[in-house]
Image (cartoon, rainbow, N blue to C red; front, top):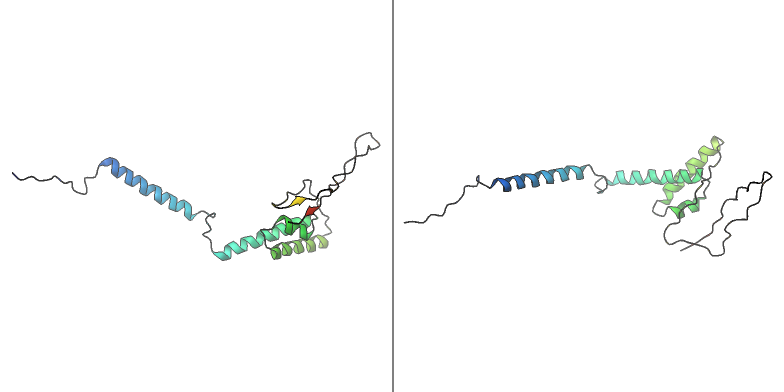
Length: 150
């Protein structure tokens, strides 16, 4: 008697395994499609990335000028941005504000310091509040904050 080992033809793969393979293929295809539309991977052309950084820097510079911040403060608060882009935005907004007689819009919130910066000890916090004629406390003056270089 000859012993023959029964072998399955390749088309006779177990149905559960076939379903698992199809699911993996579908998952891989979905991940590829999702990654193709994702901007966070950095798969854009370098020219597009540079154009976005330039426009962000100009927007930051414009906002700093409108808020009445000095150009150096703008550089300090945004060290990751190009100084040239910030300057261009600041200058464009300055010209626009002078041309249209616009005034600065002072921010209500103090800026957050970037990492590595510290408040100078002994800097004046704020002046004591006076009472106005109506008996209500007067609005305190704007805070003056001095920053130390790293």
